[in-house]
Length: 291
Image 1: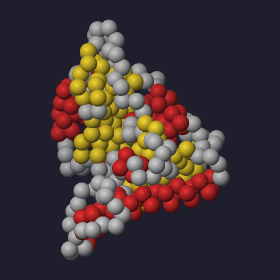
Image 2: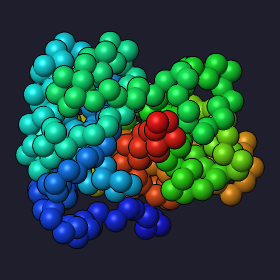
Image 3: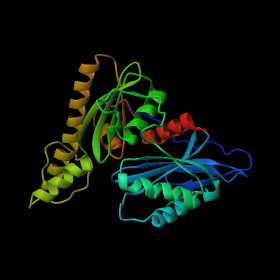
């Protein structure tokens, strides 16, 4: 196994007049007079991830379940409470950007931004500048999360590259050495694949999605974990190998998404894991469209 590259999680020292505050993924630095932060929201099918940027610095992120039945007020109160607990007042939010792949929730989160943070958000979609040339047959079909991942990966890691987003679906995106989005592949995610197994096999049951001790399971739990986890690792290795054959170049592979760390520990085809890739991409897209 090759050691994985990862982004530093060390918190920077707070500037004068600001304070540290505990938060989901480390320490936020907020509280200065007149401070304005950018609120970035990545709304996916399973989870919503939000983060706050002070300039180019991502201070903190929070994650909660996606639920199309929730009202804007429910999301607004939840997000306000999370930010406040992390030391960010709703009044500190000066701008917002949304990447959403759940159409029913786009107006909900736009309304949350206006009512609870008093800002009009940038919604990533058709007509928004991204700096990315998309060579898909129909560029509109490429989700905001895939676009944000690609924009951030190009900025952070250079080209050519493959982005593997291991979330609800396992999504592979190919970026050429010229920085063009070439296309990709979409497979059932590790979570929903295992759910289908549990639902359709009467004598099988839900197990923790974690690494088993061996590929040859000595009991039902270990056997299922081996098939689910190592099977998905094989999927990733196989698709990445085929992408590299078609790209024909020395390509970096970046993993992101909820299951990225689990899968990346079992293979050497993923060069780096960046759990905040989509949020970073949303910030970059916002900057391109500022003003």
